[in-house]
Picture 1 (tube, rainbow, N blue to C red):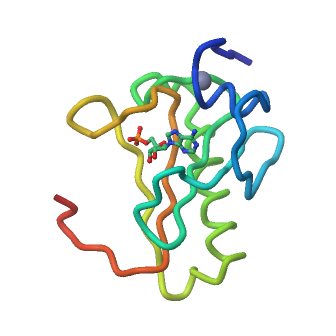
Picture 2: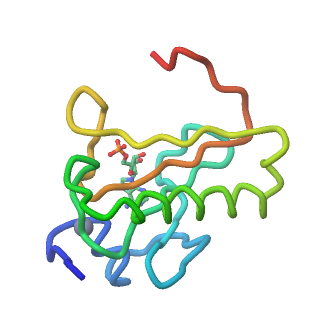
Amino acid sequence: MATDEACLFCRIVRGEVAATVVYEDDDVVAFRDIDPQAPYHVVFVPRDHVPTLNDVRDPILVGRLATAAAAVAAREGYDGRGYRTVINTNADGGQTVFHIHLHLLAGRRFHWPPG
Ligand code: AMP
Ligand code: ZN
């Protein structure tokens, strides 16, 4: 499993940087976003350091992030009313942390197109 000494999300996975962890399993860690864009905003990251969606070689990795997000959304009571899941990739996608992550945003109505 790859790790990157300097990567912020690897440092959170290793426990070197504090975060409010809301879910973890053998492959995935999820924690509250430090700058929430919704009443409930969590990011799901693989323990493995994969920089972007472009770098995913095992499609199950993305499935694990998505199903973990769905499980936490249900646990928090957002499954019925709904929620938004997002993976931002590179500059045009608005990616700022280069360790792949899936955002779970919930607790308000989201617009489409997202802008
Ligand atoms: P993105 O812009 O898609 O790369 O998302 C990166 C997210 O990580 C942003 O929503 C940030 O607010 C969030 N973030 C940055 N630093 C931290 C941190 N130390 N703990 C939790 N979330 C963070
Ligand atoms: Zn990393």
